[in-house]
Amino acid sequence: MTGSHRRLWRLLALLFAFSLLAAACGGGDDDDAGDGTTDAGTQTADEDMADEEMADEEMADEAEPEDEGSIGGGITQEALEEDAAEDEEMAEEEMSDDMTAVNPDDFDLSTIDGIWELAAAQRQAIVDKLTAGIESGEWGVGDDGILRGPSGFEIDMNECPADWSDTTGITEDTIRIGQTTVKSGNLAAYGDITVGWENYYEYVNATGGVAGKDMVLISRDDGYVAAQTIEFIDELIESENVFALHTLGSPNTLAVYDQINDECIPQVMVATGHPAWGDPVNHPWTTGLQMSYSTEAILWGNWIKENLADELPVKVAGLVMDNDFGLAYELGFEAYAHANPDVVSEFIPVRHDPAAPTLTNEVTTIAAASPNVFISMTAGNPCLLAIQEVDASGLLDDLSVAFTPSVCKAVAAYMAPAGDSADDWWIVGGGVKDSTDPKHVDEPFISFLRSELADRGLDPEISLLGTGYYFAYPHTEAIRVAAELPGGLTRTNFILAARSLDIYHPLLLDGINFAADGAVDGYYVEGSDFSQYDAAEQTWDIVGDIVDVNGGSPNCAWDKDNGGCR
Image (tube, rainbow, N blue to C red; front, top):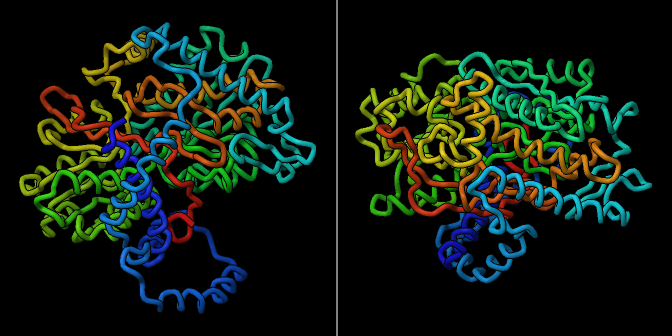
């Protein structure tokens, strides 16, 4: 790792921390931000009284002049860079501490057999570590009813429902996983993720299953409607008796993750990059998987600073999906802009209805503001619409750069259908490989998954089928680890395994780590590529170095009422 890479690692970690703090302070100032949080809930009278008691203290804090470079006043990029340079040696030590005991370089990853051998070795290393802690009495469920794990991870099992069982959803022959997702409406394409996930399960089951049991995915289409998600989660818990749950979508997951944690049910590797999933203390049963949207927002800003130096500060417009998902992006970039006025002179968020059939009016509004940078902060079909509308409006000709979001990296679903309009668009891609990208189709794992899809009558040219493997692979690895721990496959062993994963993920670009660490690090993926789309070749071209800030993202206790991390 070069000195510049270490400095960037430290800088991004600090930027991330400050952006979350700034978002927590600033989120409540925007009335629309509060309204956009669909599952904010109703504030109780006691909470109102507590707010009143804190009012004088908050007013006093606001009355005090802010020092230049403070969080409230917007810390400057220069201050962060100076701190990053001073802490270069510390960053190097932190990175070396994160190295796994199993070295991937000892395995032939040019073959699928080599990938399976590495996976088995890494699983065994995790099993050995957790088993030693459980057998010593340090980890596992103690006599006091507290589940303990690595790096301070704890769950008070005394608060679980009286009828809770550690083995619900495990039958003699099956392991039942419940899922809510979207298979209809503007985001219907994401339904292919489930199809790909099920396809991976078919392979796993055909090769012996997990602990001799078949993996079963019980999926429900919530249409990306949070109220429907709530209904289906109740059904999956009460009628389907599932072992664990999985959800797709930020508003949908926010609507149910309190309930799922109260029910003490694993909700592992949800399909959303909202920063709220990095909360192993308050929501220990829920984990994300992909790069956090807050990290992505910071990386957009860093790209602008490094690549548009002659134009700074620039005016940035964001096309924002008007819900919890879009709000996470908006708050993240708003915080970056506030902290870096030398980079962003003005940030203009324009929101759109998630169900809108067209984005013409919103893009027209953005074009009238004459921004230098356009960032699409949306998902699903609106990603495609945004690319088409930006081109049709003539705005693209006047922009210095246009970004599409990481959640719309799929070439076949969102980029190729836009044709030449998508040419030269940029993405902070989260390090994920597209299984239809010509650059990757011959890699051993992608070749394997494409063959599995084709063998079962599915089209390997559908990008999001490969995304199903992206989620299913590490999720299954955590279940495999749990099955080998003392006591066998249980919900508590599964969450311990999920919070301890440190593995090679074959659908991540080289240089991107996949690891979590108990209560200390709640995010598996904290790195990204910077890529530009080539419409003629229908491929993403990586430009510059891969960035990985593994272990550098502070956990996030999300404030559902106001947005931002507490």
